[in-house]
Length: 202
Ligand SMILES: N[C@@H](CCC(=O)N[C@@H](CS)C(=O)NCC(=O)O)C(=O)O
Image (tube, rainbow, N blue to C red; front, side):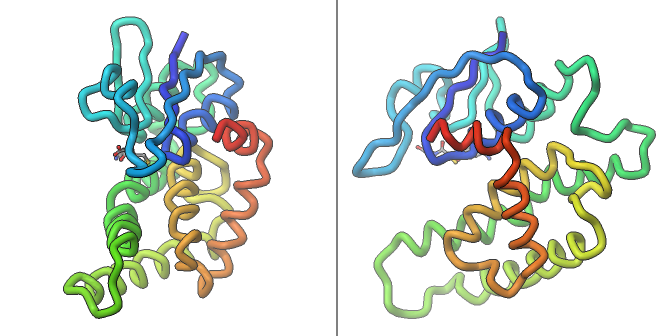
């Protein structure tokens, strides 16, 4: 059985959400962020040297990086759910958005998040770059969601799970206010029962 090392308020919610969607049994080990630094505790470093969530353990395998973990879990599902087949025209759209979450979108959203944590009252060197990338990415996302109910196309997939968690972080900084389709998508995702079961773990 897969063991999920879950850190509160972190991307490991993606993994719990996916497992809940698939109704797959798993063992949950909770790690709590340090109250002062907000960093992961030593208990997570004992599982993986990077001490980042998510980490899963399945038999001999210890795996980090949420996108890879999602793919691993999907590979265990004998019913091949939540990912278009390789032959489907939506497959490469699925793949694009699965990676977009931590790739193109992750960089400006997280840079903005971390820079916002610094006390500052003046323009920072990266501000122009971040604002440009955010506008570009969110316009692209908005147009995708204007034409399709889900990122890969007509069906919900693991790419929506990957994207939702990054959109959630963006939304805490009010970055989505000008993107109604994206905001509506986020709200729809947050109403899914499997999402709510995952979110209830902290
Ligand atoms: N790209 C990695 C990022 C992993 C990551 O940075 N996780 C954060 C939680 S969202 C973490 O563990 N932070 C705690 C720390 O850095 O101490 C992934 O998608 O899994």
